[in-house]
Length: 264
Image 1 (cartoon, rainbow, N blue to C red):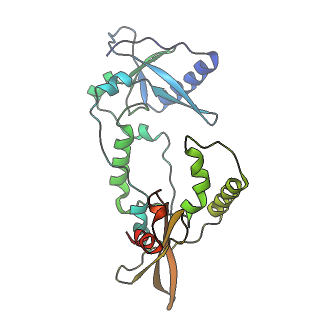
Image 2: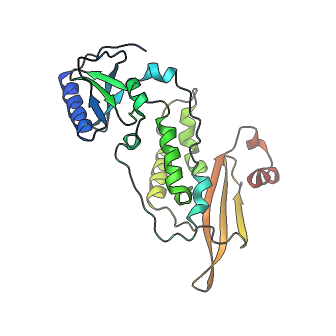
Image 3: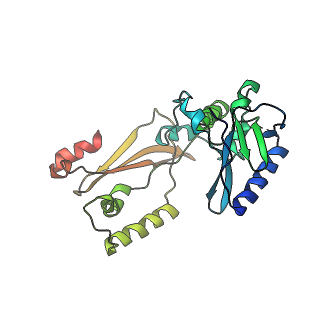
């Protein structure tokens, strides 16, 4: 660890830094360190810009190099779908400056010091730029919400629709917007704004139906349905759509073998 000086900054960046520093002081996220104390560690601040907005981060690369990585797993969207079963209300929440919601132990604050043209400050809460901040926050959210965590699912035949666009990612393909690719792009936009209403697995004792489609030579498509009792009437609805492109070797398979790929 070193005592590093602040980075050179433009007038605009200094103004943004002052705004963030004053805001964090008011929230007691940071505290100023007196000039009389011996400070062995200082980390320059960085201003990151996104969509016209800025965020204050610390350049904690030196600290991160000595930090053991937290391998906490980030949840996958498809695995959480069934947790929405029988839900009546869906709520979306956003934590302001999420990492600052977690406190820091007093003996760790000496490692979380930042320096700028306004002076030296120490964090009392987890700053942006720390290696394990995302994993720690995800763990906290999982603990708080547990079974309430949920996500959305898939669009029908997405892989087949987007195959002409994915081909542009190949190194030997000339980047050219053809009518086929433009139509695919417009269709994706339409599907995103007119997505079908998906149902949730209501009762795992009720039978599920798997519809598969491997008729084309480009991709596979599947849909999982369930027939449920709604208002006393049996109704069949879509739980999720699944699709992917065929590999080059799979594209040469016969119809029967390709259909079997859908099943597995």
